[in-house]
Structure formats: structure tokens, C-alpha cells
Image 1 (cartoon, rainbow, N blue to C red):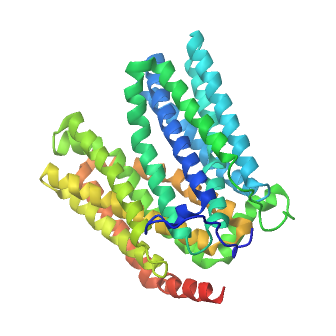
Image 2: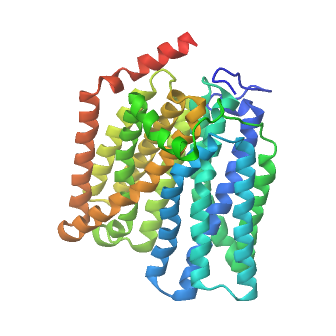
Image 3: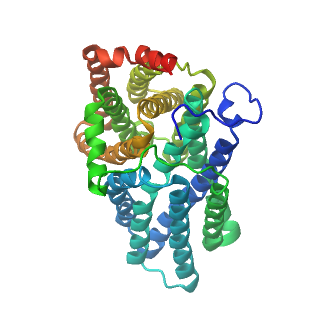
Length: 422
């Protein structure tokens, strides 16, 4: 589909939800919500299974590791595939394979034959398949809603995923006492089935041009394309730094709860709730107020404010003030990332949109690298001082990127001129 293809709409929507006027996008959002609710529920159950099978804290780390490593490695391969084939079919096939993997696991649970190595193998396969799901969805959005509604659509996608992250584990946790762990897992699989059936309602989505390179050539072209398009390279690079700060902050919340404010598990739960609520709030702010002519300024400003809010959070002497600051920091980070993703999708050509979506997932997969140095420094210097210093580093990097890059400073004007020309 051409970049200039109009979105198919069938009704007017309130401001902030305009992209939902596009019927195919409504189906996409519905399928995404079901998929994320099911996936988050399954991740919770997998952690519980790992604990029941081993009673080892290290096993929880292994389960997450075998998902994260193939997710990073497969991002290169998945992006090239997404830009070579019809995307709806690829999404359906991938979701069916995920369902088959989960059904096999459920069968072994019911037969009492599940072992920890098998659980690791199943988790590894999920990590292999997941990079084909989210980038494929992202690559389809532009063709559904068009340029004018892309920012709103990306914000609504972000809000949907944040709702799934919060509601999925909560609902699954509530279902386990009612239906047993097996029943809760079956409900998660049912949600995957609904997501797959709903995907059949989406329109076909073909790449702009037929692939002329080998698969390896297409994979390597991701880096060539980024190198040839400096704005995309700078936006991807810029978006990486807030992520490298936010993930360690999430990982260290338990330390803040126990050692800084001494509020225990209840306090940790409140902090995590603020993270989720902030993410949802940020996505809806972008959907409602995001100016299509100033996305880069929004991205730059909210990244800086995110660093400030998180820095003040680390030094707060009062727990309830820290809750407000974490809500603000999470909200600002979500605005930054939503704007970042939207800018990349607007700048990229349709023929490489799948690969650019995969590069964003690769950035997300690399962010755990930021946890280890922060954890090592926190053991030696304390978590509050370490995170405060990390915030200062990020603020300096943001200032340098803005001050030394005319490309970033003038990117809004460039995109506005491109839009007027089209």
C-alpha cells in the first residue's frame, strides 16, 4: 500500500481516538489487546511454574533470559521477513505457532509431565516467535490509518499494550485460585485464539517493492538504510537512552521499597501500579494532545523532564511524594517512546517499515544491558546515589544530542515540509 493511501473510516470519533474511525485499525487494536492480555498472563504462569519446578530464584532469571536472548537475535531476521511477505498471513502463522507452543505446554502440565528444561525450551521458542508479532503489527498501521492519524494510532497502540501489562497479570492472578493454574493458562490461550481469529479481519498488507536482495542482504540493508538516513539513525539512538535508564529504575524499585522507604511488598505494589498508570496516562496524552507538527520537540522535552522527575524520585525523603514522581516519570517516558516510534514510522519508507519496527524492538531488547552496571554501582555506592548519577548522565546526553545535532533541532520543520509536499 502506498504511503499516501487514505485510511478507510466509517464513523467520527472523539478527539484522541480518531484512528479508531478506521475499521481495520479497530480490529487490530482488539486483536492486540487480546494477545497482550494472554501473553502477560502466560508470563506470570511461566514464572510460577519455574518456581514450583525448582524452588530456585535463579530459575526465574533463566526463564526470562531464554526469552530475551532469541528476541534480540531474531529481530534482525524478523524485520527482513516482514518486508518480504504479506504481513497479515505472517501474523496469523506466527500466532498459530505461539498457540501450538502454549497448548503443548498446557498438555504437559495436565499430564504432570512438565520438566524445567522443557519449560525453558518452550520459553526459548516464544522468544524466537515474538519478534515476528509486534513489528508486523507496527508495520501494518501506516497503511491502515495514513500519515495524518499515525501518531494517534501509535499512541492508542501504546495505551493498549500498557493496559495489557497491568490487567493481564492481575486477571490471571485472580483466576488461579478460582480455576487453578491450568484453568488460568487455558484462559490465556483462549485469548490468543481470539486474537488470531480477529487478525483474519485485517486487510492484506504487502511490502512496497518486491525483494531483490537475498535474505542476508535484506538483513544487512537495515543498517545500510539507517546509515543513509541520518534522521532515523539519530531518532533511534536518542530513544535508546531513556530506555537504558527506565529499565534499571524498574528493576531497582524493590530496593527502593525495602532499603530507602522501608514500605515492603505493599509499597512495591504501589510503585509498580504508578509505573503502569503513568504509561497509560502518557499514551492517552499523546493520543489527545499530540501536535503532529512538533513531535520531535515533544520527544526532546519529555525525555529531559523524565530524567528530572526520576532524579528527584531517587532523592525523595517521602514515599508518597515518590509515588507521584514515579507516576510522572513513567508518563513522560511513555510520551517520549511513543513520539520516538511515530517519528521513525513517518520517516521510514514502506519497503523497510518492518525492519525499522524490528530495530526498535532490538533497542528494547538491548536495554537489559543497562541493568548490570547500575546494579554493580548500587551495591557499592547505594541505589539512590547511583540512579541519581545515571539520571544526570542521561540529561547530559540529551542536551548534547540536541545541542550538537541540527538534524534533530530542525526535524519537525523537515517533516512538516514533507507532509505539505505530499
